[in-house]
Length: 200
Image 1 (spheres, rainbow, N blue to C red):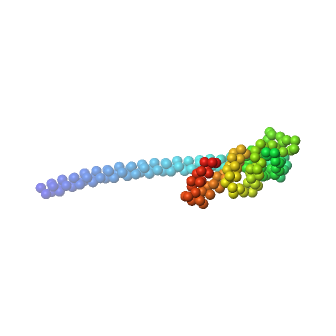
Image 2 (cartoon, helix red, strand yellow):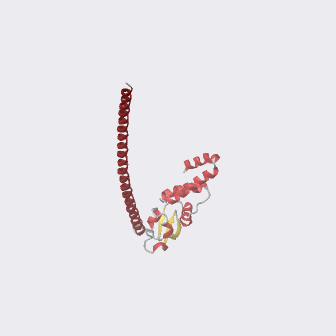
Image 3 (cartoon, rainbow, N blue to C red):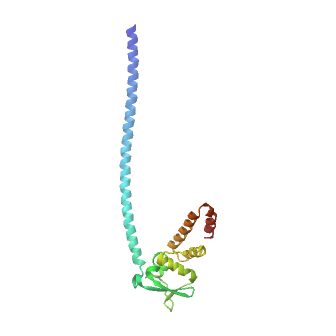
């Protein structure tokens, strides 16, 4: 009787071990399948990474080509960067170099220096610009040396002029000045900063 019980126990253990072995085999196959999927995905990621690197190289080459084309097309024209340009702003004559006016190459002032410019200077040799000459002197100072006036009122006027002249660099500089003032002023000045931004 005892031997029949031992045999029965051994058969149950055998069946359990067989089931466990099959479960382990299934899990092993699932792990092997997951590893295969991971290897395939890694290959795909590496391929995409290589394609992305190639696309980035093409983009950098295109950008260099574009920059060169812009440099040629938006160069200071005949006479080069040292060519003198006269501007009649609001009835006051200004004279500066083309290199100054082309510092922000996508601006209206840079366009005046381009060989493709369709505007012709007046009889006095100056381009007429119907804007405030008092503020324009600060625009010119910014283009020459990157300086901005300390007066908040003048900064607001320069912000408006940056749109008129399409001077993105001037607009960004005025915005940074306001942001730095807000940061220095702390929480107590935040209300003043919000008001200043609304006025801009």
